[in-house]
Length: 325
Image 1 (cartoon, rainbow, N blue to C red):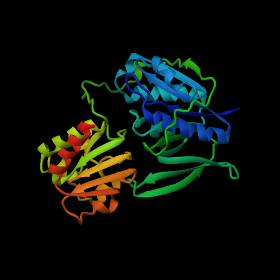
Image 2: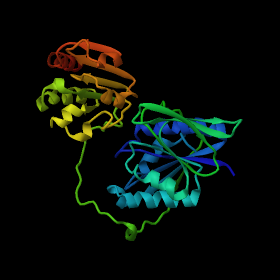
Image 3: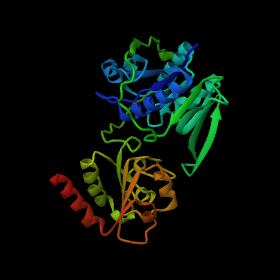
Image 4: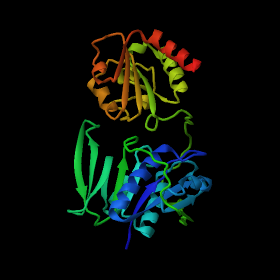
């Protein structure tokens, strides 16, 4: 029987998010090595129209729509994944760590006694040993672990964002779109969401550009400049632990060992000295730009581009230059 690789799609109201195309590209490369089909699970309260964006990128798209997916409940997602896995028996299930519901997947792996890899950076097939090899970030990204597993049972793989190259190349002539028919039981729900914070800003995990501030921003007022710059770059705002502890930013914006581990294309560090705990959070950043008055700040050792100067003079100039373009 032909093996199958399943990718869980990440989406917003009108678009499939870029991280999905990263996962599909990686899944396609692996599928060609092990002769497997690539299937995409697209789920939400109303997602059928988004399936057209996946045509040609995988063999099958399975759509699951239900009003209960408007808000996240662990029990809802767990029911869907368990029932899907029981019916279709995927060999490999791949999800991104920025997908809501990531707390389900360790439990899902435990439920089926599956292989589980978190913080995955790549997957490849070793035909001589018939092993799937991988690298994963461990110890908050401070070390890389090399491992492998056999496809003797299901594998649940959770990847870090922005570590695979996205691809929109439609390599398949035909993609079959089907409805995933699963009945959800409200009896199994143990929790209920009574309120939520609507956040329209781009999240740290999925942002391609992150503008972050530290002590050098001198207060919450200084972070307003960062929001202005991030908005123009279609990016997200981040903060150091010191800035969060000072009350200038909420903890959800914290980047570092005790905050978010991020992998943006561009990371702009403003008034950040560059402690080892903060640098652990940006190891995956492709390009680092540092702005700091201290030419000996440790952040410059990690930076690809460094600007020695006052952030309150440089950032407004950057904003003015971007507006002129």
